[in-house]
Image (cartoon, rainbow, N blue to C red; front, side):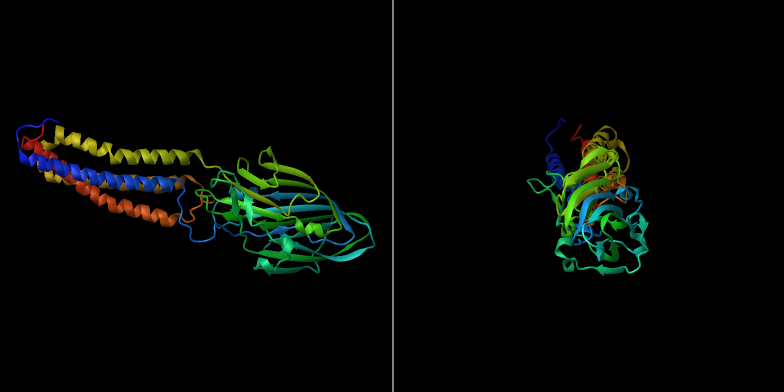
Length: 397
């Protein structure tokens, strides 16, 4: 840019432009910082990070009855088929107990923590003969502290070590309720099999947006009340391709299958954390929307300045063109800001998306965008009009 003549007013106009651009850049830096923080998982927690779900457990033990082997199957594949957040977060549990009564015939009561909504979901077989459930009793227990000590769920489920930084790699686990079901059962001397199958529900950990982490724990500790326990074969099914962490560790066999074999009871519970993988479109949307926002913030006004220097100063009614340019800049900023803040979320399936704590943050950022847009409209109009006037008056060429 070359200066012509010695016009005091030109310095005044340039100072105005400099000051307005400085103010504008400061606002943009703040806005970009907020948007980047939001894209990195900023949240404003207003409640527990883990909620919903129910507890599942081995039955309480019987004296002189030995569990020689337990085959446990936990199926979480239904979580990958959810189409909305209102669907039931079903987890199917199947446990087969190979037992041996080394004493006389026992007429005992077995108590299961089933997490089941109704008795029809709970099925029991003894020596491959289905039991009709007569004499069963269902009781809803909302206060988990009232359950036997051995039935208490773990306080956390495992996750990756670098999730929160440092050594804290566990997620709080807060299932909401449990149902207990009791059965009267005659157990003759000798070897027998007892099979139980029932429906439970996964818990949602929602503080690692943009995806829900599904949690489930199967409590093994009640099995210690039996006369003895031999080995445990545990199999966990999760949706194929999901990120899954278990404690104790189960070996992945691919295809969403994890298995483990243990002598004795390996832990008080088997704790599971699993979630889907972010679609490639999520990161692409994040990058694309931020690039679009950058183009609107800097190249667009630079293009407008170049246009007015080339041809814009010749347009009639330069004030109306200036207002039009400013309004266009403000509208484009609103569109780009909305896309940067909420656009990536639309690439995540609704049933797996976690927006816990996010609405407040998003509302705040959108409010900033809406408040900044009128400022850009004013700045854009001033830039156009002042530049065009300066060129017309021979101050700029």
